[in-house]
Amino acid sequence: MPRNDRLLLPIGCVMAVYKFTGTEIVPLNCATFAELKIEERGNLQRLLRDQIQIISPDTLVISEEFGDWDDSRRRIDLLGIDRDAKLVVIELKRTEDGGHMDLQAIRYAAMVSTITFADSVRIFDEYLKQRGDKRDASQTILDFLDWIEPMEDFANDVRIVLASAEFGKEITTAVLWLLDKGVDIRCVRIKPYGTKEEILLDVQQIIPLPEAGEYQIRVREKKQLERITRTTLRDNTKYQVTVSGQLYEDLPKRRAVLQIVKSIVDAGISPETLQNDITWQYLYFKASGQLSGEKIEAAILAEGRTESKRYFTSESELVFYSGATYAISNQWGPRTLEAIEKMIVRCPSIPIVCEPMS
Image (cartoon, rainbow, N blue to C red):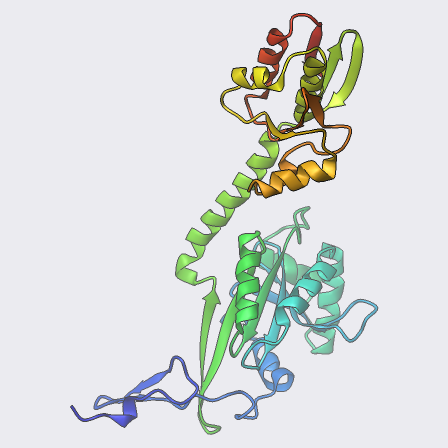
């Protein structure tokens, strides 16, 4: 089959825009903004500020080159508000990798996160005056948000829009991680094609993909809920243990277990006896001789246990019985209280009471 060179992708293009003529499909020339003499601020930013819906739908631009802070070198390309009353930080780059725009945008988002409605009116009013626009800043914002008067939930979050000819792997990796952590950030690719005489722009939101946006939001919300649930369900209850009238207060569960084990062993009951009652979990690590904390840690690692930190190994925490050293486990789950009850029953000779502190 003869090769049709007209259907080969232009050099440097991973994807291409094609021209359909009716007789053939011709790939358009893939270019860069630098080759086409398109400046970042003088051309791209100047045009996008008035047609911001191209990269950020439902957004009102309230400032350009915004830098209302001490370091005047740091300026947000475009600052806007969306229909949900969130601030929108928009960073533009004409480069082929996006540079460090993700780090810049995060810094800017933090800087503007405290802006109030009154601040936004002042910022927008200055912007309108610079452009010779006679609109009332406050009323324009209210009309855009469909509000009658300012509301408390103004600017309760900040969105980030990164627009560039291409994005390097470092940026896309960082953006995906930020999305997973709940940051509202997106990448919009603006790819030029053609020649100086006729320039076409291929504009696509590539992260998150629009068609997967709702699904990704649901996944992100689920992960956030799971993180909150894990934190909420973590048992931080403190206990007090009384042994023969001696009170030990403010003990986490695992330290309550340690104190009870030490007291029972001191009363003459072996750790092996206690282990026989607690069949669902290892109670200790055992080594011959009276070892120091450093040596018992080395013995734990030498036996192939992945982490010595899973045991109480400081000098005051070790248990000694019949010529051996025992490092008690500090890994205790939902059956901890059951284990404590079994150990107390095993040692009726000394009164032991364990109860949660209010």
